[in-house]
Amino acid sequence: MKSEKEQFEKIPTRIYPSADQACAELAAEMADLIRRRAGENRRAVFGLATGSTPVRLYRELIRLHREEGLSFANVVTFNLDEYHPIEPDHSQSYHRFMREQLFDHIDIPDDHIHIPPGAIERTKVFQACAAYEEAIREAGGIDLQILGIGRTGHIGFNEPGSGRDSRTRLVTLDRLTRQDAEKDFLGEANVPRYAITMGVATILEARAVVLMAWGEGKAAIVRRAVEGEISEAVSASFLQEHRNARFLLDDSAAADLTQRKLPWRVGPCDWTPALSRRAVVWLSDRVGKPVLKLVDEEYNEHGMGELLTEEGPAYNINIRVFNQIQHTITGWPGGKPNADDSHRPERATPHPKRVAVLSPEPHDDVCFLGGTLNRLVRQGHEVHVVYLTSGNLAVADEEARKYAAFLADVEASTGDGGASGLGRIVLDQLAARRPGAPDTPEIRRIKSLIRREEARSACRICGVPEGQLRFLDLPFYENGRLRQFFAGPEDLDRVREVLEAIRPHQVYTAGDLSDPASSRRICADLVRRALDESPADGWVRDCYLWLYRGSDQEWATDEIDMAVPLSPDELSLKILAIYQHQSQKRQLPGREDRLREAWQQAEARNRALALAYDRLGLAEYEAIEAFRRGR
View (cartoon, rainbow, N blue to C red):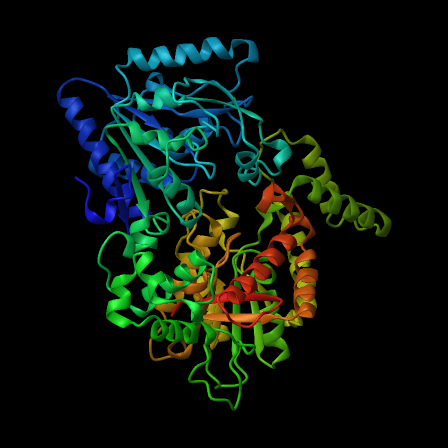
């Protein structure tokens, strides 16, 4: 039986405070099945997924093996998919991923492991797929299938258009799927165009299916899969037909479900000021009217009669919410000196303030708060920009080759090649490297230098003195791999030390709620921990934490605590600063299926937010950067 709040959901969902908690419970369930089957002298058969989503689950299974003696000797596994063509030892092959993330750390027999053959000749793929299906049948079928979900709603590599009756087969990868993988392969051109995947019908034959999703980046597609119609456009929606399928979500991935986003539509609400603001903004957008023009009938017609009864009439609610939103707007992000700050998001004193911008990667600072950064400098504040990671994994080989060739020419012309020879070394290493091989220390070094110089150039445009830039190069990033990052004590110590050295009145950083293993999310968590663990009676007591969204989207209007308007000139300056990050100059998907570069996305995002404020009935601005209070 569904609860009242779950009435719009067509697949059972369970929402957890964190991905770690969800994975611990699922791993315990898997361990129970393994032990129960071992007692019956039978095998447990699992379907496994790859990508960053299941990494925490695999780490918990490894812990159970090492610390609690869980044996995998009676376990048989079938992986969902593999790129094609790709060699098993390629750095991005799923064969290698599963070895590194799970199989090499447990006692599962090699002949119990099944992964689609990505290196097989094209002419033999059909027969190999049929054999894979037969192997699943011979194993007795899959007891529990683990899934993630892609941004297109795919499970496995069942891209939009995959039918309900599809079986294990070769598929052509969707453009968005390939773009999501471009960082892993150091450029979209290196991403395979094909993959071998279990089909939808194969997945639905599993006796139980668990789909895991973490982070706000998955929220919209999770809602479509759970609450929308069954459609080939979203292959995960076919799980609505399964009698024993469920979704495990963290709070961020569940954010767009009706029970979380629009709770007044599923039952009685605790009408907090924040929820009232969200509901009124939603209603304004729904009926296409400014906040101050909403009337009682519109509240009643859209399920908000309870709010009207408790806090109405409509005009009283409208004026209160309008004032709340209006008070988020400020041209003084560091606080306006000698002014009444009772309705401003920032304090007037002290002035000037020490400001620390903690950027997860070079270019986050100017992409998400370039206008605010410039405004803070011009208004006399002491602004420090701290780059937490080098960002070198996001530099394509072609970009490194260009700079290495320039450096090699300089070394040759000055006779300095014998002293360092970095340019020549990198050129030789790039020429000799096998596809998919990881960067050498020298290649990563030159990629780091590229990003540092781009950051310095962008900050000069924004007016930040070079002496107030810091590059931390946190170890979790330098020693890790994309989508498989885990921070350690040294990372936290470095963040603590830099904050203690600056002792800021304001901290700006990413408020990203995306994949828990992403560099941006890890950096956001490190900053929060460093602030939370600082002595409460010290500088941190008077420090405000301001969070930018940190993704291709913006904060919803009802979530914003500080909105900083940008003039046309300020927006142009921000775009020029972003443009300095030429190594990140690649085309990205945008609205109306057009391709946009990073500066175009930032411009569109800031302009769209200004329009959203305008539609609510507030002043019309060229563009707006937005922040939420984190503490």
